[in-house]
Length: 160
Image (cartoon, rainbow, N blue to C red):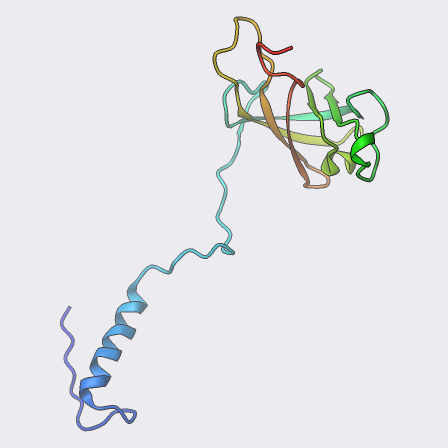
């Protein structure tokens, strides 16, 4: 693109020597693609919905059947002291479970009967045949929009 400047004398108090490069910079920067800002929302890819997630990235909708600590006590609404933390446990109506050694605020804010989207985020490698433990799921409560990430078992495959 060729730009012809017909400027005489000073423009905005600047000599032609200073004004032309500034004009070129301003013109060129208007044609550049704006930088992506961290605060700029980026459309997330739609989750791959399936009946039973078996590949990383696949998701399913479930209904919460029970919420408790790992020891089957009532999950407290507030974070317990470390010595009294019984972890978190959730079971869905299809018998899928998630468990953690730590208390989960997002799970504590959930109720039996809430619908969730559960997405497989990792699968352990080099597992003995038939030992599927240790799959990690990120779950979003569709009522509260809060999320938690937990494995399906307190032990990974080949473990205790």
